[in-house]
Length: 122
Ligand code: AMP
Image (cartoon, rainbow, N blue to C red; front, side, top):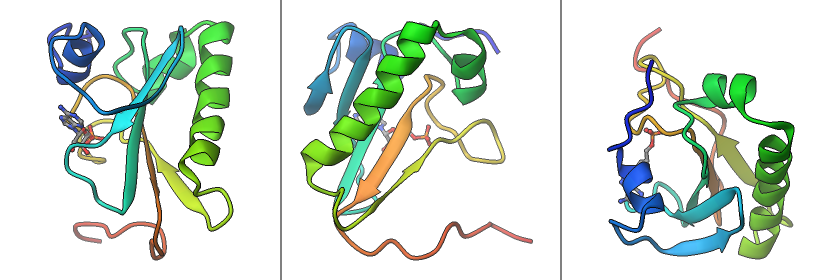
């Protein structure tokens, strides 16, 4: 799947759409989800143009991957959810109902999240 430079996160990265930033460095931006699914719901995205986890994991540089993983852990600490726990999740493709085709992690916390996922059907 080719990267769509007009996806909403690409537009956020270009400053065309506002966001509530919680963290930013050379390779990473993190901001609050506009439609939070938990008391804490933050999106962590690489600044590079990667469609999904599959794309990022295969094509990002070691520097980008290291920066992304380290930033994600640090953001959880900075958000204050480290002690009580949190969940990270990334949707890839149709089965996972990925909406925005720019790789991102969801970071959920601030409350009890229950176990795992609820499939649409089994
Ligand atoms: P996914 O289904 O994994 O692609 O998740 C996309 C997420 O992006 C959803 O949780 C949306 O609520 C969130 N989202 C969409 N537009 C914005 C926006 N402008 N600012 C912040 N979050 C957004």
